[in-house]
Every structure is written in C-alpha cells, then in structure tokens.
Length: 195
Image (cartoon, rainbow, N blue to C red; front, side, top):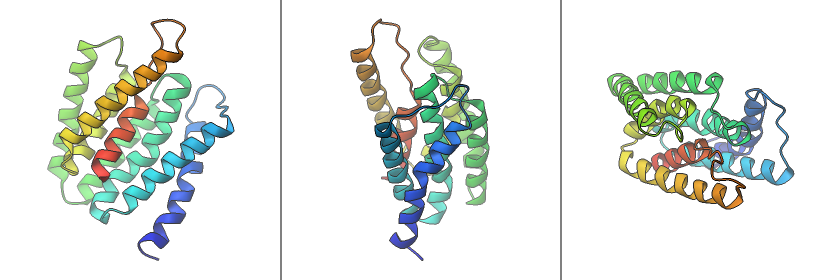
C-alpha cells in the first residue's frame, strides 16, 4: 500500500498509540472524558496523516515528534510537566532520524543550538518556562531546521502559546494558573514542518 492507503490506517492508530504512551508516562491516573479522548485522537491522527503524506526523508524526522511529542503534550495538560521519559528519547530518536537521512551535522548542531536557546529562555522567563519545555526545544530545533521552517515554526508556536494562555486565563480562578506549553510547541512545530 502506498499513499493514502497506508496513511489512513496509521493515522487511525495514532490516537490510541498516543494515549497508551501518555498513560504509561503520567505519575497519576490519566482519566480522560470521551470528548478529550476524541480530541487527542483527532489531533494525533491528523498530525500522523500530515507527516506520512511527506516524502520519507522528511517524514522520518517528523514522525517521532508527531507521536511521542503528542503523548508528552497530553501529559503536560494533565500534570503540568513534560516527562523526561518522553523528552529525552524523543530527542535521541529525532537526532538519529536526522543522521539516517544524511544530515548528521545539521541534526547535531540544531540540537545543540536549540539547547542553548532553551537554557536562555529558562533563564529569562524562569517562572513561565519549565525544564520540560526546555528539554523539548532541542528536538523542535532539529525538526524545524531539517524542514526549513524555523520562522514559520516560531511564529506558529508563539501564536498557539498565546491562545493557550488566553484560554487557560479565561478558565483560571487565580492569576498563577499553569499554562501547558507542550501542546502549542508540538502542534506548532509539526504544523509548520509538515505544511
């Protein structure tokens, strides 16, 4: 099967796979309402479908973020953290995918540059930018550089972070409500790189 024939089954399986990975990555019991399960499954399926529609050398670098990154985002919404058990393997797999497509130096340098940017962001906005977010940035850098989508990715992530902060602010009972950046970072990067 090629094209749409192979993309549809993977897209359909993406949601349950993401939820299973997230369930094994949380510290507390992950209880999602049916609407949340449907939303996660739809987003994961859409992201997997977008990624698999790309040429293989581009898809291989982006697919780990579409699956593991989406699972990390679910954990972030649920617990307010991006777990090491997902962020570190995600970085390793993404860099290895970059190496396998013949852009080894670019993948490694992108990860290092992303790590430097993450540390600077953590120092500048310590209260609003967690270490999980910082550990996700090198992976995002590898993906965005590989897909020549740095500017588009930064803009889309910024817009989605602002929208997320606005939505959380509307429903918050106090001004110190935790804003999960993970979903905005993952969806913004996958969208920018795939489109």
